[in-house]
Image (cartoon, rainbow, N blue to C red):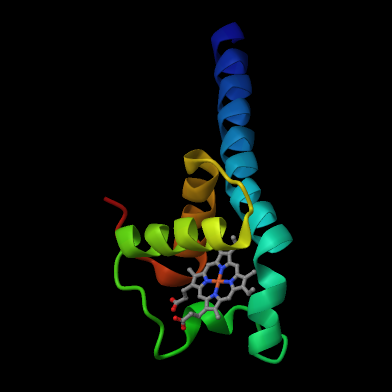
Length: 99
Ligand code: HEC
């Protein structure tokens, strides 16, 4: 019984950890990136990532673009945060296989 409770608590910890990481990428992105994209597509920021002529064709090139925008915009994210935002965009829109 004790073991089961321990497992349940451990699993919960694991799950909430993952959710926090997933949300972090979205929070970072929504804070720093969404307004400018939205202004270009009549408020539909997600169209930046779903338009037919979008430029990215792999996880690596998507991450490069996130890193590039991070530099351009002066967001000051570290590589880990660039990774979280890339994962968020990839999970939500691009669905590239992650290397
Ligand atoms: C000042 C305006 C502006 C800001 C702020 C901005 N972007 Fe962009 N972003 C653009 C424009 C314009 C393009 C389209 C470039 C093109 O068509 O080559 C773009 C394109 C992109 C793309 C590629 C879309 C595709 O598949 O073609 C990604 C990914 C992206 N931005 C991520 C970000 C991230 C992450 C941030 C926040 C750090 C950010 N952008 C902040 C203007 C902005």
